[in-house]
Image 1: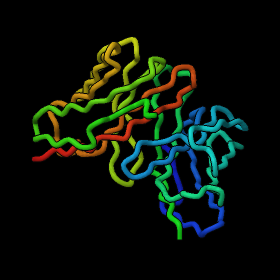
Image 2: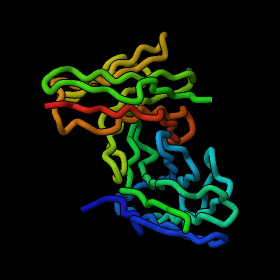
Image 3: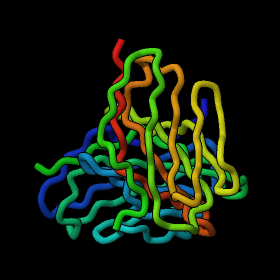
Length: 114
Length: 113
């Protein structure tokens, strides 16, 4: 059945290391998004992409990078420049041409620093 | 500066009673408002939405009310069930930005049997 798959569920990063979080969707959605959630906080937008090979910075893009080589995939790299990477990362996707269509979320990846 | 505010971090309600979750916003350009429900270690699940041109939308036990003059919306759950216990996020869509959402910090609802 259709959905959004994030992997891994848990990830550990060493100091100075880049790590990549995977997000795949088979909903045929046009747009994909990455959010970060910290304890007691709402979701904050990191990056989003509306079409293949194009993406835009969100509110907290510093220290992160993304790519959108396929419609189904939107991986997020947490670089060593992100000084506080410990958080719960959520990927979402949605249609763009249907009014009021909500974003659908994956089950998240929890990133921790070793 | 928070554009979407959920001022109650938690709410406790008896099973069978009404749960009312509130949300305030500051930006008049928001064109859609959405409510999501989230369990621990899972992604948010979409519940219900409302267009800024409406004042009420209903779906089963869930009703969302929008008061544009007060920049306030609320989610009513009637009757509340123990399975409704979760964190509820209010989100607003920035009009013209192709779906980008701004989320509140969430309200943790506990429904007691």
